[in-house]
Length: 200
Ligand code: MD6
Ligand code: FE
Image (tube, rainbow, N blue to C red; front, side, top):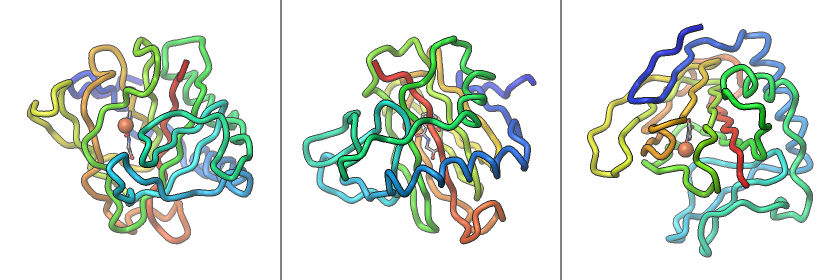
């Protein structure tokens, strides 16, 4: 499948079938008793509007001390392993033989958003970040490597996959809003975004 290329972000529309989306969601849910969703606080002490957890050797974590990867959930548990159903997506689009170390799980309720940011807590930016959208539509804003660069936006739907690599790896991006209730994949609406990363 030939992706859409928006400033180096490769967007694969409807890459994941409805059946595979449901399987991925079940597999991700199976890890949540071990590593429940929590509300991270930014380095500036502001609670984020998304709920988060992770799978893999590392989980992404944020509190007043800043952003980082942690080998354990704040409850002391290991993070669950990344499901095979998710690794298959990485293998199909990442262009690398290396496996990801972290699958960050973001849950967006009705008013949740994600401010413009760079993903730069990893050690080697030659590996891409792969993002999987599940559930409600989300307005994804894409900029350049300078926060002041002009931006453009694209709607991401359930089953879409975005690969942020090459010159786009350090580009600013964020989620302005979700269109609540546009998908029936999640029982109570909302959106789950999975981002796969090589950490160290
Ligand atoms: C989201 N995504 O789609 C937030 N990061 O909910 C991201 O922050 C993201 O989609 C890196 C690469 C792709 C992404
Ligand atoms: Fe990001």
